[in-house]
Image (cartoon, rainbow over the protein chains, first blue to last red):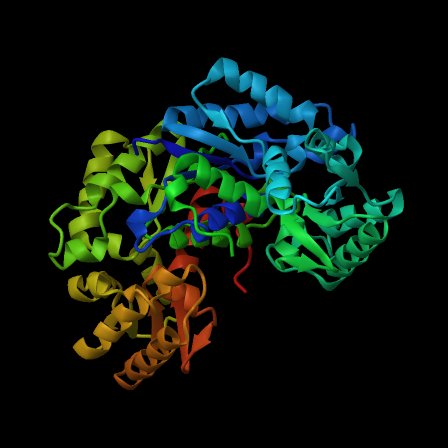
Length: 253
Length: 253
C-alpha cells in the first residue's frame, strides 16, 4: 500500500459508486486478486443531499459538507487519491467547495476532477472534434459545468429545455427512472436517451459525453446514435488507475 | 449514521466485494439515494494472500493478518457491522483467527459469519431439507468448513476429488477461470459448474449451496439443475441489511 489507497466517494447514487469500482477493476491489468489496486468505496448516502436538488434550489444544504465528511473518513484510512462518483457533484458550487475544504483538511489527498479528465480524453483521442454533446442530469444542464471544456477549445451542445426534462425523468422517475430500478434499464428511459442523443447530433454534436453515472449504466456502446461516446465514468476509472499505478492501466479497447 | 457503517472486507477477489455491495443495494427498500444504507467496501487485495493457497499449504502467511489490517481501518471509519466477502476466508483456520483478533482490537464491531447465515436460511426456508450440496473452492472443499451446518442438523455433500479439481479450474484457470475474466463467465467454466451440480444432486443433495463468491456470479437462478439454490453471497447481503436496519430488508423474491 506504499502508494496509498484510491478513495471513491460513492452513494451519489450507490449504483454509480459500485459501477465505478467495477470499472477500475476491469481496466486494471491483473492476473490474480493480489494484482488489483487498493480501493475504498464509501457509500454513505444519508449524509449527502441530492446534488441536483441543491443546484436547482430545492434543498439549501450544500452536498459538499457530506462529501467532505466522507473524505475525512478516507483521510484516516490512508486514501491518497480520491474522486466523486457523480457528475452533478462536479458543479462548481459543489466541487469547488469540496476542493477548498479538502485542501485545508487533507492536502495530501489528490482529488481528481472528472470533467477535466473528459476534456483530456476528447482532445487526446478525437483531436478533430470541436463540439461535445452533453447528456446528464438537470443539475449538470443548469450549471453548464461541462463548459469547463471550453478551456480545451471544445464547445458544448446541450439538449433543449423540454428534452432535458425528459432526460431527468429517465434518471429520477419513481417508476421508469434508472435510479429506481437498481441496475435494470427500463425501456422508456432508454427511448428518451436515444431520442436526445439523436437531437444532440442534429444540433451539431460530434461526440456524445455521457455526463451522468446513471446514463452510463444504460449506454455501454463505444458509438451511439452515430456519435463516438466519451463515458465520463470509464474515463474517470482509467484516470484513477493512471494516477495510482500507470503501469497497470489496460490498453484502451 | 447513528447505527454505524456496514463494512465489507473485499478484494478476495475484488469482484466478490463489489458484487456483495450491489446485492446489499438491490435488497434494500429505497425510494431515493438517501434511503440506502451506509456501506464501506475496502478492497486491498495486495495485503491479503490467497485464502485457498493458504488452506492448501501453498503459502504460509495466514490471510487473517491482512484481513485484520483492513478491519482496523474500518474501526477508524465507524464500521459497526462487518463481513468477509469470501467463502474460503470462513475456513476455521482463517475466520477464527480474524474473530479472536477482532475481539481484542475492536470488540464493538460485530462480525457476521456467512456460513451461519446460510444455515439459518436453509432451516428457515427449507425445513424439510437435510442434505446440502456444496459448490466452492478447493479451500472450502478441503477444510469442510460447511460442516459447521451439522449443528443445524444439515448433512453436507461435496463433489468428488476429480470434480472438485475441475470446479477449482472454473474459478482459477488463467484462461477460462471466472477470476481471470472480470465479470464475464466463460462457457467452459459454466459447463463444469452444471456438471458438478448434477452430480451433487445424484449424490443426494437436496439444495445447492453456492459457497464461493465467484460461482455466485455464474449461477443467478433460484433453482439450478433441479435443486433450490442457497447463494451464500445473497444470504450474506440480506443478513447484513437485517443486522443494520431490518425495516429496510426487501421481501424475499
